[in-house]
Image (cartoon, rainbow, N blue to C red; front, side, top):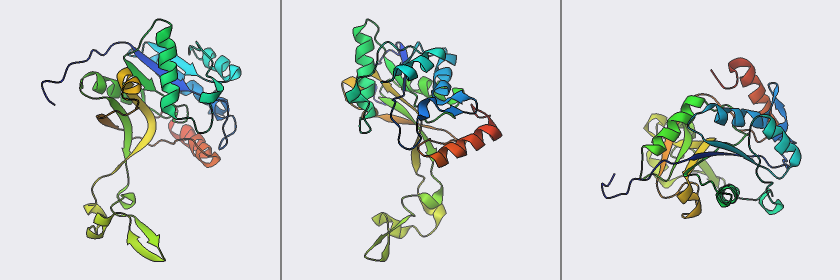
Length: 244
């Protein structure tokens, strides 16, 4: 990293848990009970266990969801406006609204941790490690959780069909004939997104220009469909929440 880059103070850390009312894939998923607990409770409890995190705020458009969030210890200093609770609302806009609203009330975070309820299997140690990674990397704009993509799903190895012909998905894929030769690929797994406030507000991005990966290795599920929910129930029964 260039020595000329300024060092940025870590500063206060805010965890944001987004939980809007509408959900098509899994009706009422944010407060639907998973393994004996409303789904959003797992994200809130994770954040509240970590001494690194100063405040935990739930952003929702639903008074009912807000009440459930408060029962787990989250703050609900505002109700999210309807225009930021649509199916197509970008998460960046939700985070910007939360940060600006809280800052206008007199408390300004330097680091913002996005914890989506739909990824309940995150591990405390991973989250601590990822926050610490951003704190110790002054030129980084964000840290994002990723997992290794199995080699047979690598974009260098997968195929596409055009006009009934089987072709490499990537042009360079034609030179990769063995799975073990494909470069490693990583997928965002939704466990956490950790951004500097300046990344969100000034660069208008969750990632920024320099995003560091934090590779997680435990099995997890990102809840979008009822099949995902059933998989999560099985994993919770076998491995617990959070996972062992």
